[in-house]
Amino acid sequence: MKARYSVIIPMFNEEEVIQITYERLKKVMDGCGDSYELVFVNDGSRDRTAEIMREISSRDEHVKLIDFSRNFGHQVAITAGMDYAEGQAVVVIDADLQDPPEVILQMIAKWKEGYEVVYAKRLKRHGETFFKKVTAKIFYRLLSSMTSVEIPTDTGDFRLIDRKVCDVLRGLKEKNRYVRGLVSWVGFRQTMVEYVREERFAGETKYPLKKMIRFALDGITSFSHKPLKIASYIGFFLSFSSFIYLFLVLFQKVFTSWTVPGWASIVGVNLLFNGIVLMLLGVIGEYIGRIYDESKDRPLYIVRETKGYPDAEIEDTRKESDYAR
Image 1 (cartoon, helix red, strand yellow):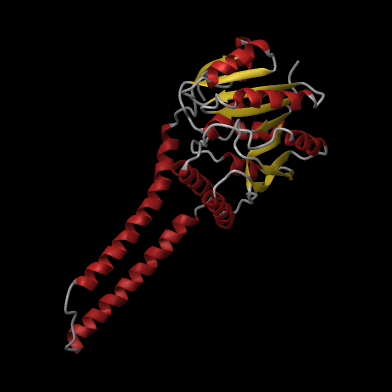
Image 2 (image 1 turned 180 degrees about the vertical axis):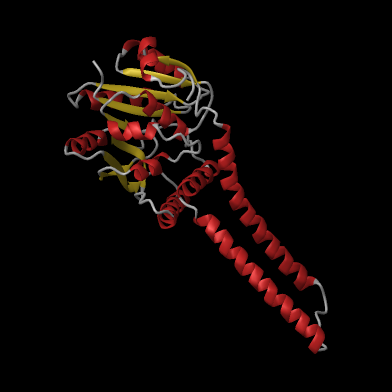
């Protein structure tokens, strides 16, 4: 009997919390009154996360484990979960319990009303620094202003999607993935439920500043060409300004006796302009790098092993290799 609900849980070094996460998810899904599966995706954890989940999977038929050969990233782990999920409704939730599993029941209720995407909107964010709250708010509003796709603000990957939405997302093969943006891009009937995000139950955040910046760049470059347009506008402005400046220098040299007494100002202007040019080249390089990634056509992930999936079932449901996508 196929599961009606699939819950995807990406994991990376979550040994301190994963047992509690499983217990809370099981309690919630047991109360939904229908068949379900819990798809845990181990994204190359270096602790006992995979070992704990293997043991749980061996005694609970609802639990499935997808174990990557290495760390491929949070968004790719979500994608793998969607590839393997068989439910008519698919829920994505992180393992750190910042997103309360109990909200899933509210999402299911909205799905039964006919909505095909139900995303969770944060009213408050407990346990996060002032810096992270401010930068997150700035990023979501900046992304919204730069893209033609309406991506809801103050939302993460915690959401429910219908089977038809999941199937469409499985067909999108881009490498630098921003899943919440892709869900908005595909459309369908969407609504939200509101909740208060809790403090992380245990362990450390998997999104330090460096990864947050990388994630922000993926979001912006995946759904907007405006940075390239801005680069063109700035380049035109600098070229025009340089022409005016050159004209003034020639005018002073030919028609006046006043000339620049030193090189400090010239060097300063050159450094400023060169810095801006290098910055614009960096923006262009971000897009070229993504083109390069797409052209290599490597699989998004490699699966080392699975638990809870009969070999015949995998063979029937996978369109490509059993171990790479």
